[in-house]
Amino acid sequence: MNEDNLLIEGRNAVIEAFRSGRTIDKLYIQDGCRDGPIQTILREAKKQDTIVTFVSKERLDQLSLTRNHQGVAAFASAYRYAQVEDILARAREKGEPPFILLLDGIEDPHNLGAIIRTANLAGAHGVIIPKRRAVGLTATVARTSAGALNYTPVAKVTNLKAVMEQLKKEGLWFVCADMGGQVMYSLDLTGPIGLVVGNEGEGVSKLVKETCDMTAAIPMKGDIDSLNASVAAGVLAYEIVRQRLG
View 1 (cartoon, rainbow, N blue to C red):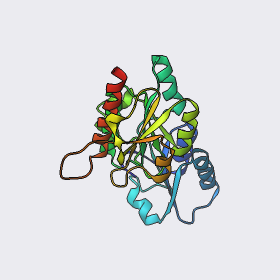
View 2 (cartoon, rainbow, N blue to C red; view 1 turned 45 degrees about the vertical axis):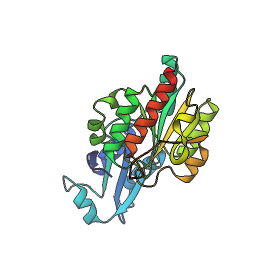
View 3 (cartoon, rainbow, N blue to C red; view 1 turned 90 degrees about the vertical axis):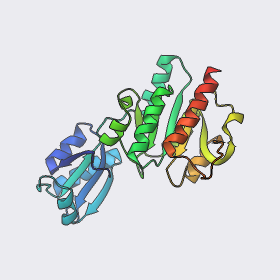
């Protein structure tokens, strides 16, 4: 967890954060704590599908700023998340076919911030990220986005594959960034589209890739074999822009 998220400590504070609707990215609970307030926190965490990690008191002491954590600490998102429907509504309001970036496991906050910035400038209607094994909307992400996070909705979902299946029913189709795919210039990237970009090391996961309708490769002529995730997202996003303008 990137610790430039907002840290919330203490049982009542964490309960109120959940009940106020604030998105909790990760929850830490001290091993052995199972009393009433902790059970209440766990119920609220289950409703939000929040990642819960049980840790030692020593680990909580390390995380704590106040040393008064009462056996619980939570990291809240620096920004509020949108819903997937908000992204589709944005496209409808603009009278445009939806253009969405889906990010499979981006862990570097600088990459996520840069991709959100590119999404905004390329006219994408929003960004979708998974809840697990990926960075959330931290302060570093906000800074790196250079203000784009104030204008580009970001939705956080439990299961990317399931969301993609649902979006297919809305008419979207999906292109996956993959070095083994067809050269992007040979593909028709017009219409309602979701661009899927994988993480910095492993790329797009197998299940998500299998859900995509096609794979797009960026032609490369150099001596190394891959681009940074945010650069790859930018290159492909602007090929989609070029074809939309054409």
